[in-house]
Image (cartoon, rainbow, N blue to C red):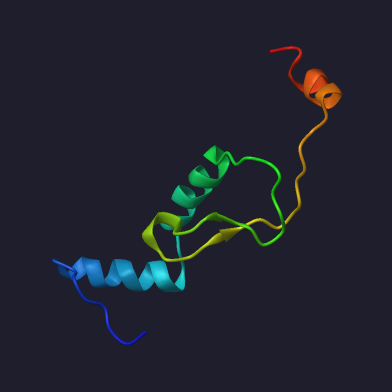
Length: 81
């Protein structure tokens, strides 16, 4: 890390250093976003699901291929709703 800029109080620099070396605050937000994520199938491995995670510039990529479920499977999964 070269520099931390834009903090308006001394605690801001400490906060930024901690989040870079040992993220504690961003991770729960990230997991909430991932849990709420809904994508359309089909999904291919490596497909960008979220292009800019929480403004960090990081991409969320698919790690599995997901194809459309058959009507029979869809009926079994959602019949009790």
